[in-house]
Length: 433
Image 1 (cartoon, rainbow, N blue to C red):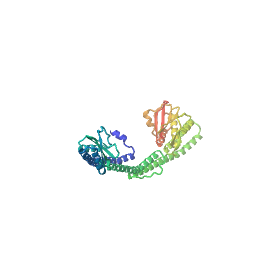
Image 2 (tube, rainbow, N blue to C red):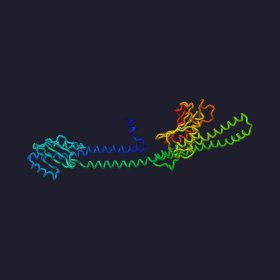
Image 3 (spheres, rainbow, N blue to C red):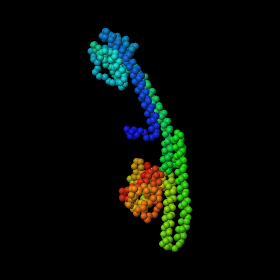
Image 4 (cartoon, rainbow, N blue to C red):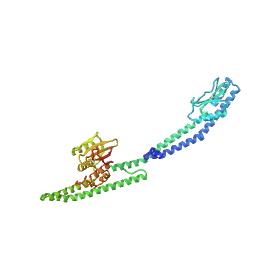
């Protein structure tokens, strides 16, 4: 039962707040209506029906003293003007064997009980045949004595008025609650949108905390956290950029000196070491910059990937074109890192573009030896390299997959490593549409 209630309960704070307010109102109105109909309306209706039943009983007794059509007509003339009760004799007829039930069963029960207490003869009644009258028939020796009583005499119309105002009050309270709760939940939705945009590296616009005290505090804390994160990223970038700049100068001098020296085997080894150091510095700087450069825009993913595949000379497969919100330079860098990773450690890299109604998938497959499933999380960490044949004697600092993962996370997605259909490794960038 608890699982069922959890499934049917609203998921949003707006829906839950509305349920908290509206549900007690509805329950209260139902209780009030039940008490009213049982303690007031039913009592009033019973008193009215007893009065009509008494009039029918008196009219039946007066008719029994002179059981003629003329006497029935005289009773009709007497009762119709002041008592809203019409009398007619139907000679040689019998009572009907069936009748329709009224929607308000309490009315039928009250009339049936009142007539049973007031009349000894067999009777029949119908509260649904006529819109403004109730048909009551009493069996007499000469046939059937038929009475038409005004509905107002046996039914309290104030009950409908009460129900009308009860429903109207419920609707008004509901509308007021909807407007109020929507205004209260709006700051929370704006905070969630701002946090989501910041998580994707997008501009949060002119977001300002407002609303309830708790929501404002959460918004202010988010803005302070955003400032700290941006300051940390800027400091990291400046630090490694400075290190890179300071080291490039002596590296350039060493390369110049080596280029002017006599060509020997040890000098060639030193040149390769310098090139590797320069590549490492570039990789460090790329990682320090992260994926925060550039603004998000509408990108034709199929065109971007096809250009990369053409430049790299590798196959590209897709079902149909698609456009997504992304930072083109950063997305290009992520895909190139995956392609470069496949070239270093495997063979025959290929790019595949797929999408569903909710996500876009960019697959980079190779035909290498793959990565064991228990080590795939490790290789996504910065500066991580596997100690097996896949990475032996290969240049690099272990940042390619880490940068690709950061870029995927910047776009609200993720980087997954899995087995490729071609037998090697499949690196997938999953992005939301």
